[in-house]
Image 1 (cartoon, rainbow, N blue to C red):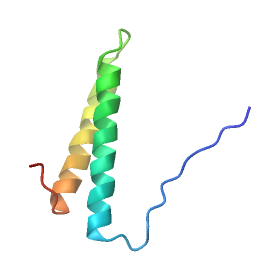
Image 2 (cartoon, rainbow, N blue to C red):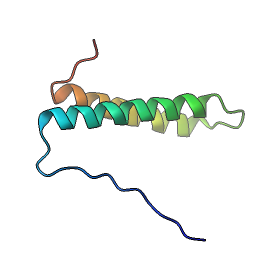
Image 3 (spheres, one colour):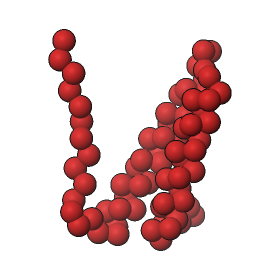
Image 4 (cartoon, rainbow, N blue to C red):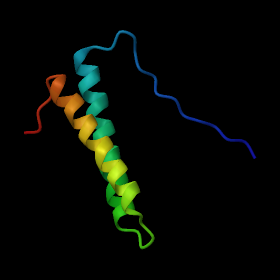
Length: 70
């Protein structure tokens, strides 16, 4: 069996608009991950907390870069 990994192709240098788009996409993906995991019967609180922390960090990074949640 072969395992392949997708890599993020982050341009160097990344413009502010590209950064905001990437962070917003990452936030949405983390929120979907949280939603899907939260609805499982075998969920573990420490994993939910870990995902929550990731979302909080990404939202802070997004806000610090000038993004808003309007």
